[in-house]
Image (cartoon, rainbow, N blue to C red; front, side, top):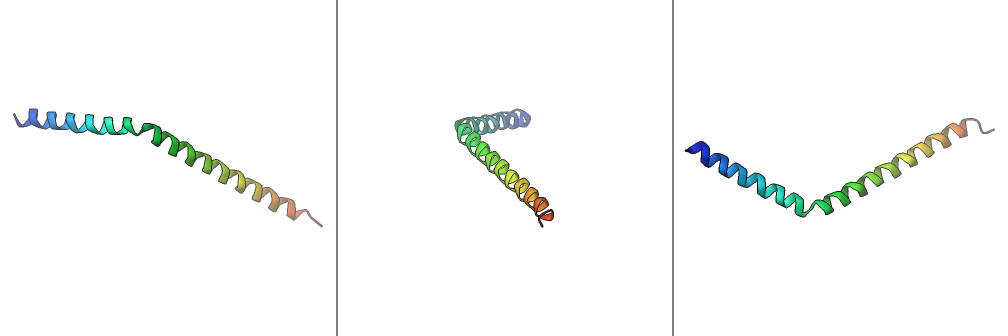
Length: 60
């Protein structure tokens, strides 16, 4: 009997969490894409800084 109650509660909790994630999935996706864009921008800046540093080694 306890097993049935535990499974029922677990199913309800899982369903509630899934519904909340689905409600906010567009926000989650937007924030994730924004964060990924920031990471790509930062990586690009790092590459530019590295290339500028290498270029400065060969300046007279």
